[in-house]
Image 1 (cartoon, rainbow, N blue to C red):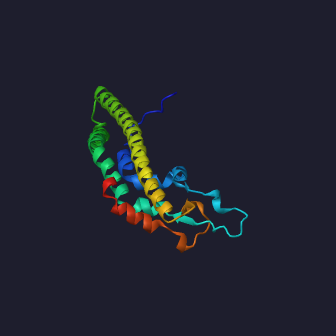
Image 2: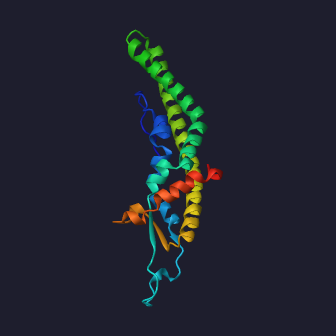
Image 3: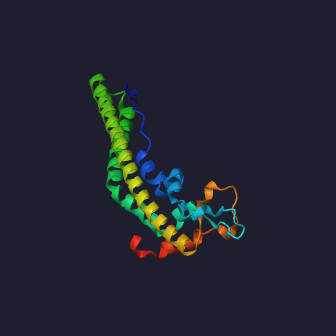
Length: 204
């Protein structure tokens, strides 16, 4: 694959985007497909039998975004990732600061530099820029892997609690709120699940 042309413009603060911009909460919300794994089908015949005496289907709706925003498990996962990648962030920021200082010096002194000095400085900047790009890609890849691991853990915790709650309360189906066009407040079980997540000290 052909490499992109190099230039000596400062790189964006990519590590901030990795660590701060794409927080655990934001990425959880985007992972809609994973919500399907939370749909609990504790369905005794789905309640669609022709028997007129059959009990109506009991449905519940769960606001996933609220769980991500307010649950202590999601908050702790975010803190774990932030702590784990802090060293990498600091390394990246120091290297980028060095790059910017050298670029500023080149721009300031290029008219009084000899051709050899200017060429050497430009090559050094190009090399440092490539190092920053490589570091960005490595950090982003590793962060994505760890984020998926943390999200899978959180999904399993939520699924276990929702499963237990739905069986106890005799729900037939629990649906994520963002897949429904309308749901009355009475079928929203989000606060109930959030309370159980907060009470579940083992998973925090």
